[in-house]
Length: 419
Image 1 (cartoon, rainbow, N blue to C red):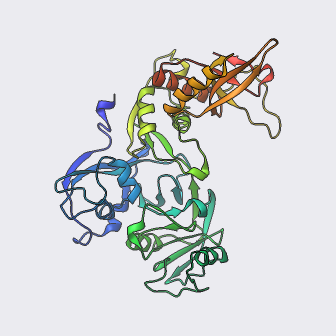
Image 2: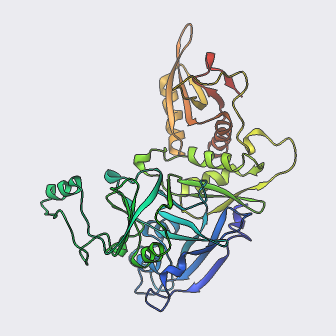
C-alpha cells in the first residue's frame, strides 16, 4: 500500500523552481479546489533547487512555512540544499476534522484554511503561531475589527519580557517597517489576539509570535480584503489528520505542540483513524499508520481502503462504543481506556517492557495492581478516549512491536478487561 503514496489523488509534479519576485503573485498559491466527496485538497509537488536557494526561499515562493518544508524534506540542508536537489512541496492537505466554515487554523500544522470564498474553493495560507510561552488559544473566536496600517500596543507582559532582556519597547509602536503587525490586522473576540501581517516574512511557519496568528505580507493583504467582520475563526489542535479520497483513507501527521500535550506518540494517529472510519469501514494498514505517525512529514499518505465486506475485525476500522455492561461515567469522571501489555511481579521486568514500548513511540504508564497475595506492576499504553480507539491502539502496538495486549478501562467497576 505504501508504494502507492498519494496515487491517483494528490498529483506528484516535478517542476523547475522560480523564486518569489519572478512575476507570480504569492497569494495565488492559496487557491484550492474543494471536492465535496474528498477530505483532501491540493497536490504534492517537487521542484529542483538552484545553487543560491535556501528552503525558506523555496517555501515562500510556494505558499509554505519553514517547518512545513523542513518536515517534508528531512534529509535536505535547509540553508544549502544544493544545485539540482529535489525538494518536496507539501501543498496537499487533509482537511481538519472541524466545521468547514469561516476560518479554520490548525496550530500544529501552522496553516490557515479560509472557507469563505464558496463556489467550491478555499484559500489556505502558511502562518506563524505563538511560542510555547505565548501560546495561541484553542477555540472558536470571531473577527471583531479590521485595521489597515495598525499601530502596535504591546501588552505589559510583552514589554516586561523585553525589559528582562535589557531591551526597551514603547507602549505604542507606530505603523512602519519596525511594526511587527505589518500593514493589516484583524482583531479577534479575545481582543489581545490578532490575525495580522509581519515585517519578518522569513519567519512564517515558525513559532514566532506572542500568541497571534501571523501571515506573510501578500497573504494577509489577500485575506484581509475578503474577510468581513463577524467571521468565525475556529482554532484547533489536530497534529494528526485522517480523511477519505475516493475509497482510500489518508493520514497526515505533524509534530505536536508541547504545551497542548497530546503525547508525541501514536494515540493521536489512532484517534484520527478511528474518527475517520466511524461511519465508513476501512481495512487499515496499521504498520503504515505507525510509520506515518512517527515520521511526521506533514504529507498525506494512504493507510487504508474502503472495505464493504462484513465481519471486519474490530481493530481494522470504526470506533466501537464501550460495552453495554460498562456503566457511563459519573459527573466529572473520565473513562480511562488503556492497552495492558503485561502484569509483572518483578518491577524491573515491567520497566524493561515499558522502555521498549517508549522507544517505539508509545506513551506508557506503570500502575500498581494489588492482588490478594502480591502487588503486580502493570504496563499500560494510552490513554484512549473510548474502547474502539483502545482496540485500534492495541493493533498498532502489535504490528509495531510484536507485543500483544488487551483493552482495560481503569474506571469501570471491577476494572473490567475486554479482549
